[in-house]
Length: 301
Picture: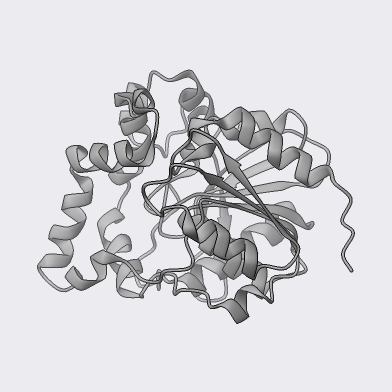
């Protein structure tokens, strides 16, 4: 059985990994200081033991993005994935600011309410920028940091130029178009066989949630995640693992080296024969690197 808060189209999923994750999505009302109304927040948690791992999805995505990676990590450690404010299946309240700062605040109170101990924070694509922002603000919460083909060196969004009426609505309708989403998906994978109809359905399921377009417009108008400069990156305290697909056509490969040079106590691992989504395209290898990294003793000078 699927949770009742998911769109009816969840029944169309055929991928066993996607079905298993969708069936285990939970929700929790999270109170944050910027609104009087608790935010019903969706998440998945599996596994036990070790340092908790917290997975942060990319732009216009959901916890379903981790349908292949999360179960592999959960075999060895307590693992969480959460839908960020304004994304996934988390409630999009009216009259709330969908900005990186409020997203960060919401994520902190989610952690404080449910996890309550330092985590290994894993961010993919835009989720990497969110993870960097979070680690800089709450270093006591992040024991280690993992960036998977991370955004954060180029700020803003191409959509921001279109975010005024009526083009703002039309821009989100373009993103709603399954042919457009399929084209983006195919660019993200090296293995085109993985850009399947079921993968498309997974990536589009949250579009049917109430106020999806309004929240996406508001987030883009906020400016999204600004580019982190070298000085900011040099202040990242946790040991950092940078995982990067060696054929990433979305962000390219140069940013991986920049992150590695700028972030202290970091190591770069290339995921061979892989595009922008190692956690979907090479989940076993990605999970192995994360688990090995999480289990290493933290010896900082």
